[in-house]
Length: 127
Image (cartoon, rainbow, N blue to C red; front, top):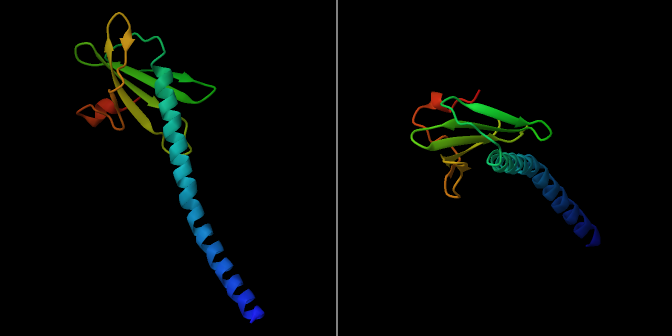
């Protein structure tokens, strides 16, 4: 009876080990995606603090120590578009944020996007 319980416990532990090994790559992918998003979010916050002279062409600044990159482009009227990328092992995640150009640049809390808000994909290509 004791032997049977030991064998059954061993089989259950082996099955659990296989299940956890199969789930590990999924967990690592999720962890990497969260890190990349947080890095892009930090790059966006950093980009809002920079001094920009908005033009109709993309202009970019990079923080070498972190790998963050922020790019700004003037839109129609007083609108500006900020694109921010954080460091990532894979394709970088880009976050987009509308702002207003006045005496200074202002970025309202509700103006950010996960995907480029411009109508043509070619306008979203960062240098």
